[in-house]
Image (cartoon, rainbow, N blue to C red; front, top):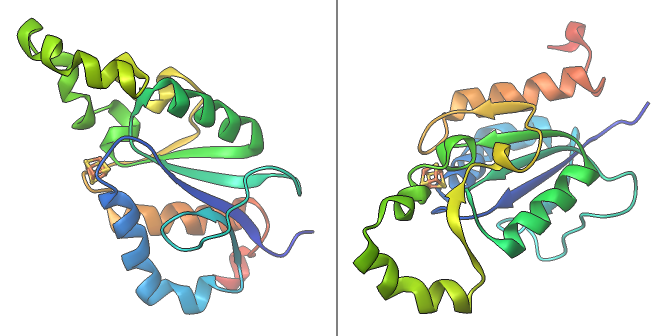
Length: 167
Ligand code: SF4
């Protein structure tokens, strides 16, 4: 049995406020989680990040909506490499508030068209569930911290890293 939960934290289109909540939670959970989590991908926490190889990820926590073709491709790659995908925050779960530009009027859309073309933006900003299977959601904007902590703790039990008797 593996002794650490392999996790990744990914940010797509959003303000990265949900990742900030995750970092805040480490202020009081790291002493406990440090020996239980193998953080393989988290740009906010480390310089060297891995997505492929070594059996991939147990759980990918994903913040942000999908607004570019590049993001869509990376999301599909993450899904292939992760046993479980959890959307963290409302941008990932339902698109908003990052999806505001879906409601722009024609004049505003014409103004931003050069930027959208230059950076490979898709016509619509969409939640991650429109592209890949999502196994769980932590709601909120930013995400609810207690619900995020519970999602990590549930995964530690589900993947057998920790036994119920140890909780
Ligand atoms: S859900 Fe809210 S806090 Fe999280 S990335 Fe989107 S805008 Fe930021």
